[in-house]
Amino acid sequence: MPSIKINNIYIQYETQGYDSSPWVIFNNGILMNAKSAWEPQVQVLSKHYRLLRYDFRGQGESEHPKEEYTMELHADDLAELMSALKINKAHIVGLSYGGMVAQTFAVRYPQLCSSLILAGTTSEVGYKLKLIIKTWLSYANNNDYEGFFNATIPWFFTSKTLLEKPHFLEKTKTRYARLDFEAVARLCRSFLSFNLTSQLNKIKVPTCIIVGDQDLLTEQIYTNILHKNIPMNEIHILSYSGHVVCWEQVEGFNTVLLGFLLKQTAT
Image 1 (cartoon, helix red, strand yellow):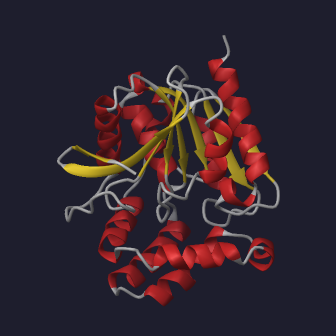
Image 2 (cartoon, one colour):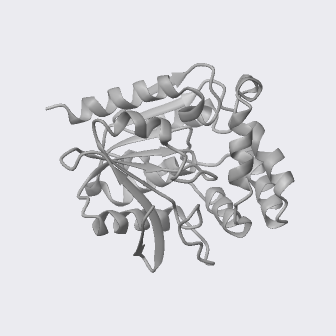
Image 3 (cartoon, rainbow, N blue to C red):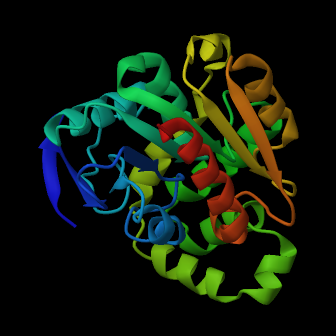
């Protein structure tokens, strides 16, 4: 994957698809990386759209600067990346942390956003969710790989998935072994400080909200807040899925995603 310097840091990215097609940009979950996070979606969407995958600052192969991260900073990075790659406007897909960035981007840069697809995400962090993320932060601060793995995995996948698809665990272990826990801690602190609910009415683009029916991390209460406060939205609850809905229910997720995008790009 190539890298490009924007906002004084190097960002790793990859583009695919047809030059004349509309752009779709993918924002990763907090512990994902662009190399592997969206492969099931890229296989389908690259036939219809121009795709951009990238790692946030502090993620994957992008640079991990020492200063604190914020959703606004991530949104600014994306705007600069789009400018450098001459992308005038795009549909923005975001899972979890990436959905927080996507919301912030839509509020901060409405002229660059064609639509939003928000999966397993929230516009605010309630008390229970804060306790969960603070636990992750504690393990990250202690550079405790095993503790961090054990503290995070139960919140991402259903029991059924973990029993029937053990390769998910193996892939996650491999990815976690490369984590920069100082950067992960900064990402966790950024997560904890997020609250955009009062600004959701500023999102003026069509929005697709997707959530797994067994998502224990970003629960239904958070989905309801998004649904109630974003002016133009549709909501899809996918059965037999936990938090990482784009992996657990690939076919259902891709069907919803492609159907929504085709409605926005139909001529």
